[in-house]
Length: 372
Image 1: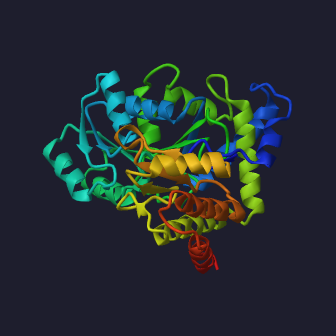
Image 2 (image 1 turned 120 degrees about the vertical axis):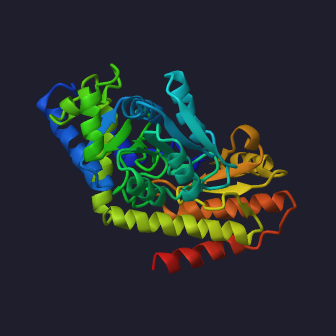
């Protein structure tokens, strides 16, 4: 079965082999050396002065950032299931919050963010998804962060980049906390979250000393010494160092970004050529999201049963109206062409369009134009 859901992504064989080695104790010089390699790799990837790894899913990192950096009030963007999570975290901790609620296919505007910030001086943290994976939407995060910092540099900009980290180059110049997760572009099992921190965020975390398990001050103290406050997910961190080795062997992260972009945009063009509708107005590179209210579920069923291809549906109100195809990680070209061909064959089986190979033709032409 080919796994093409937008997380968890397949764990490739070299990473599985690295993680299958005998477990080592996390309080040893041997693991400290591995931890140092992982930290260095992440710092280089996100270009931020500090990075933390937590034994949690990405939601744990989101909660740690909200509790640490929001003392007064949060403004968050809700354009899907993951955007609404920042508000739920704030509510659980009795932190005042305000949401900008958009349709799941619609990115937030800089103007709407700045209008609220200028009206409400109590807001001290802004939270947003870079890629809202519920609908495959890409927000203009970097431009918004720049506008916020130009207006008030004391507002902390918190970005959930779980579905974007490792997919595309992120300009972190105006971002204070950048959140990632192991089970996406890193091709690792779930269980490790990542927080990149600006110098400003490091200072705030050390001043505020919030929480127990998710205490960022405690983690900063320990992880700067290449250890962790609590038990580390050793196996996943070993896998992360192997990921960085593979990236280096495959031309570096910029090459991975180029391939990912070409593959995602080529799939986008191929699906459009088959008469399918791309859902978000500003699609993320991390996945391709198709809207078909009538046929999405039937297409997914055929793909799974007839072509051994597992892709994701939608969530909540769009559960049966969307299907989502992963583009995160290092995906061989033959698997991408299999996906495009399988979708075109599924459309044929549903008598929606006769199979003529157009999708694969458009995919390959576009891919090699972009990745030439």
